[in-house]
Length: 168
Image 1: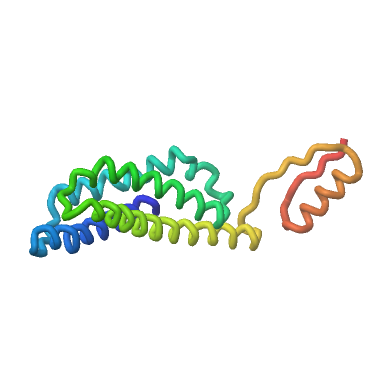
Image 2: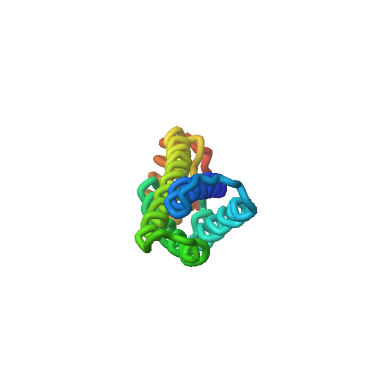
């Protein structure tokens, strides 16, 4: 889903640049899907997936928090957009330097909004499954007193789990 969101955001950003930035610069609208569009459609999503992988977003995908997803996606999106700006956008022909701010902001808004939306939907899906006890986590309880056994018994009753209680 991250790659799909990145591809959609990049396509929308490409159209934005052609329709607004280049029209203001050259005076005519010319939306042509050239080789740069297709290269970006391949490499930009790969860049984002790699960046999210490095940040640890694909590690333990079942333990998601919506607030954590939002804040982590926000910070990674800022970092990634700055990298893309210096790698791909800095050499664009522009009317004035303020266009750089606008294009960077538009890329950030497009990418962040699409990515955070799909991530929040996924996190909500996981949380719903956890609350309905369709998903769960293995838990190891160590101890040999009555409090330990009472805790295991309570966990088994509350979760309808088929845990094992071994007395030694």
